Image 1 (cartoon, rainbow, N blue to C red):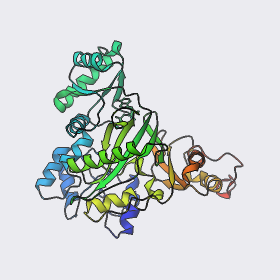
Image 2: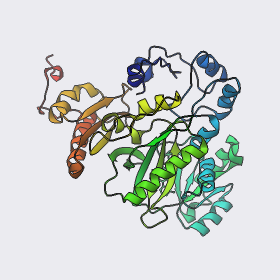
Image 3: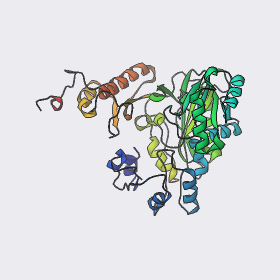
Image 4: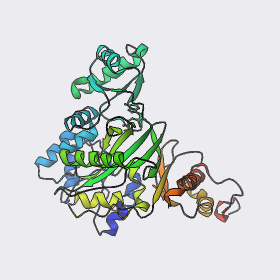
Length: 390
Ligand code: ADP
């Protein structure tokens, strides 16, 4: 989704594609195929570019250090990025900065896990420090299961992976009221800007909906959350867009604890495509190129973003007539990915007045639902394209 913004700015965007079929390759003319875990592929790709940046966090840190030492401009640099790659490193940094963490510990055995659970309370949230996403790599462990097979397997895998000294991350299970996200962007020369803090609604550990700004969030908590994200970005030397995912816990500290960090345009920032003067994709490009950042002002009082995951409709376009006819205010963003159940394949944004958020949510959910599930037969907007005689 950086491609349209790069094109608007007249930038020559290249991507290192995992295969010729990846959706970005359809919109970026220069998309050499290569493995992001292969240093030589990265070296070839980086030849002659002004800056290398990311749309995921999985490029090995040691490769990024190698590129950096060879003079490649990597933004964000590996020393910052490690805090989005490794949740134990992130916990240490948040603690060092004096920002609110849940109770946590790096644990290396079921015994250490049990010790932590006795101290922090059960159940415990056990996480693989690296490589997790969308809830993969998160296990809720009850006291009776701490010495069980599933936990033992995770410790074994952690030892085999050989990172973090074979440790897993144990966290208290936070009794949060909702999840929030504080999105910021920072340039290498220091300028930083924050968007409004948003509410992030997850279904089965996958982001489902974003409400911007987070309804009813106390101004003190909103300010503290924005400040925390800006502090993290500044102190860790983050460049580009960064999302600080937060758990809202009213009455505890500033009203939130940090969950995790992402250093790239993030699902919780997709609303900015239609709800902010500068979208997170444009801002990321500006930031990594060390250009002055754009305004993060909202263009509407409120924006709702609703994801659509692969569902019962394999042909998303067939539902467009019905979705567009029923919800003309919905801005549709389809990623051009193959439709697989549970895969994020697009989102819609709906903007409007802050006192009408429930209508915006209904509009967004309505449009996304039609695209995901297909138009009901005879729906408004039933289109000749969709009729079998065509
Ligand atoms: P991922 O990297 O897969 O996104 P997260 O660390 O964000 O993993 O965890 C996924 C989800 O699990 C969170 O969105 C939240 O709902 C729940 N979760 C994670 N950590 C905790 C915690 N310490 N306490 C309570 N719930 C948690």
